[in-house]
Image 1 (cartoon, rainbow, N blue to C red):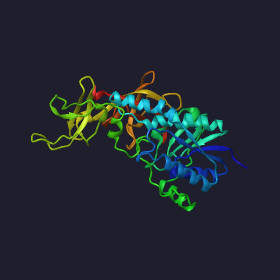
Image 2 (cartoon, rainbow, N blue to C red; image 1 turned 90 degrees about the vertical axis):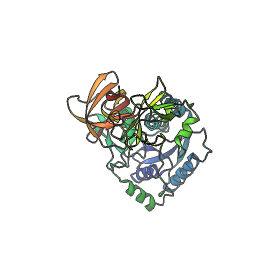
Image 3 (tube, rainbow, N blue to C red; image 1 turned 60 degrees about the vertical axis):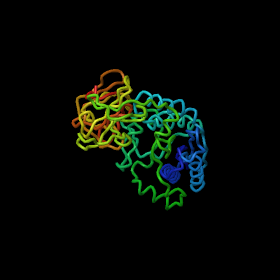
Image 4 (cartoon, rainbow, N blue to C red; image 1 turned 180 degrees about the vertical axis):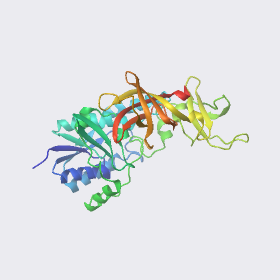
Length: 364
């Protein structure tokens, strides 16, 4: 007897494929759903959506489940891509994959799945969910190197109540083994990287299609002109590659980094040395805070947070400073905290939520 209907978001990749396989083995009625979120240039060499759909259909056939393709390109453009462009235009560095999870995969996709009669939806994310004392918690994955709770921190109680993450306790290497053992055609398929609508194309080339270049000066903190930038939108805090600044005879020979943006004067602030004070942030403010439980954590005790995905948790104190606002004070300064990126808070393995980095006090 079926345990109930679960709709699995199938991307054509190995993680979502094994997710569908495991749920079928566990006795669920499984329906695959392939989401098309981008169609501006899906005939280009950089867009793999057609091949991804072929892969997802082949896997569904092997597993023995139905699969449907649904087009969310309009919702994606309205809810995710427009935000992405606005943020870059304002000189910030957004993380559209986080918004894609909360607005597309766990909203548009969830709504569609419920209309199909699903009781739950499942994805190939490496994360966990559990109910405790009537509240749903988002958990880190057992495989710390693949944990994706950072990207899911904007999910709410209703979304988590419908979510399943079957890969929570399975290492990535084991996922590929399972795919091989069951003859899934994408068992060795390379993981997709980067933002879904950009694919493998050069990022600057993509952004240049949508945002105008507006060259200006690259300057040191004391105003010395070191070179020219092609537009503040094309640079991010901590960026080292692509600045085109040599060491100079009078310099220490250390590399240069982007460390700030003077939007009013269209100037990129550059500093020399990885540990320059302008790149170190002992505290920061965050806006648009989202707490998964619906309430902020206890401000009197220490928690942990990360200001970028590939980062160790850093001990900090979190103080609510206003509606949807919080102030993070770290035991150790964080490197190149970047406006527009997300700071995500944790209590052990439980993801508490997070917000958008607005500014770093040390740079104010």
